[in-house]
Image (cartoon, rainbow, N blue to C red; front, side):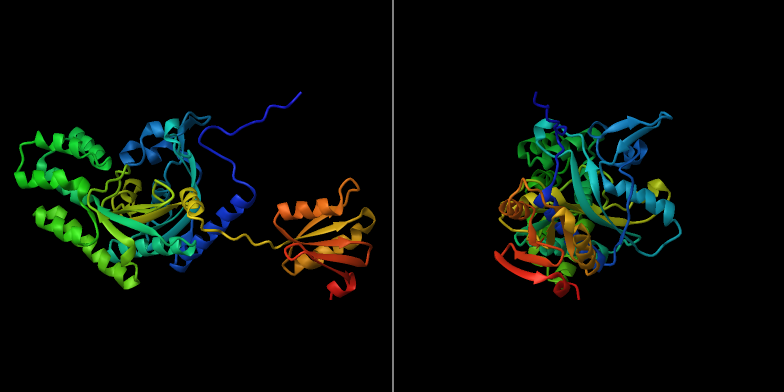
Length: 419
């Protein structure tokens, strides 16, 4: 009888062997960049009280959360988003700190999306949150570190698209849209549905100039020239301030030397309603989804009890790995394990040798030899495991040193290895 294989639920997957190692390498490289920018690690629970992520907080829709109950009947949720959880922590542990707080994280988020979307329901994010800094310098810094993270993992062809929520907010406030109309308009703009936007706007009794800029919202993307173009299209104060902020951000990014990585999208919106200022997404070819998301959220932390401006960025590691793979950008694995093979009667010598090398920082695997397997079988096993070399104990003192990469074998004495 053949045992039935157990599979993972839809939307989650196992990551193992070389792929898992590559993922950890990427995460560590990007984490190094965050540390270089002065960010300190924080870890929040995988699940929290549902209220942390409720509609009022502006995070994802309730139907997209994994919800369950504890023994006391409290409604809990697997975190769909890192930012509200960190905002809660900041309000609790940094209530009296008024100068900048820099926190970074690495962990999974869980979105119960529809199966037909073909997206992972658990994804790994690495990100950073800068709290208590409302300046344009903070906006530019978060964009700069995002670019450096992508460069650090070998990505060359990518763009950060930057928008500002107040450009849209200023226009719809001036037009007098109701909440339901605003949501419909948001959906049409996000889908780049020009006909849908035109239908919604045409029915409003508003100034023709305002109608024109609303019509063009899905098309207002490009380089810095689009900011000048949009500035001439509207005199709305909130929209003008948004454009001015984006210009200032761009000027600072040029000082970093990163201006070429930036484009602007004044029709950019986000499903996260807590964003209050600059928002951005990073794209590259090889994946249709954003590999970077982020933005300013100056009103979220105060919902947890501390009035603090903030801006954050999240890098979606799984999407980034897909992009690197499809762009044929290799993440080189270091074959730095050494396998010690020994017969049972030489166990003591093998353990002594392994302890010596481990004390000197070498990664050592140990394996008692089995007569059922040939020498070539062990070599093939070591290669499958990305092991760099083998030490075969012929007796308590004589060792074969096999370099698997160069296929070179030497015979040495144990006393020569252990100095």
